[in-house]
Length: 248
Ligand code: NAP
Image 1: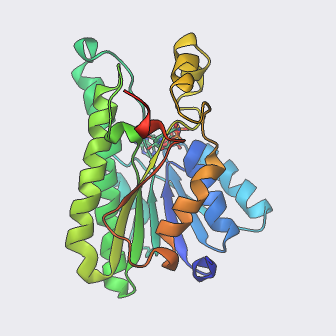
Image 2: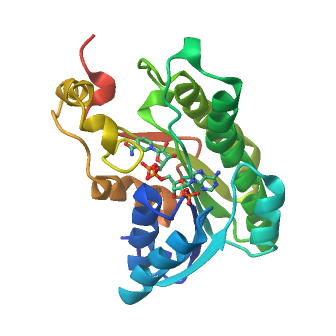
């Protein structure tokens, strides 16, 4: 079903670990040549070796998604067919105590970063004449709120709205822009929290009563990245064990 992915190229941001590395691995398994991007070069190189050892093709690029000069230096004029805009930070903290620097870090990484990388990669997609698929990794916290995540929730709501705005503007160039909204999937970003009593209480409020596994995002990722989703743009797909429909 996803055979058209073979021979394509993809940039995956935040691919030095967590979901980004998982997404890159899944795409590589489907024959996509993946470029792994994040700030930690050594972690990227280790991730690339794991993908190569499994028979995939992986390159790595050190970049900071919050810095347009860093993106331009790293990407140059490399063209990509697919962008997985995944880099993100959590920045938890009560709104009353949140510093301006903490707010800026979350918004710069999660929202400005998504915009800057999309803008840079879309240029090449447009010039290639082949179009492309952009998948922005948002979150169910872009739809609903929880305590202690005001900056994160605002950034992810921004990603959802940005996704729709870019889909509208870039459809005529053959670009599709969609958002994937995961629920709670255990990774480094939240592992400490889910080890606490509050984390365990949260899991009890998920209708399926468990955290998601990274591989449970694969269907939505492949749909949005491949020709199977050729008429899908400006959409958000939630993969959350029913968390968004939990009882009020
Ligand atoms: P993670 O394990 O902490 O990974 C985050 C990745 O982003 C790392 O590779 C990190 O690499 C990279 N990154 C952070 N800041 C960056 C920057 N300025 N420039 C470039 N790369 C940067 O988190 P995760 O759970 O995999 O999350 C991945 C995405 O999924 C995030 O957007 C997150 O908001 C979203 N999400 C996660 C969940 C979940 O339950 N896990 C749920 C909903 C949404 P470096 O440190 O090497 O730069």
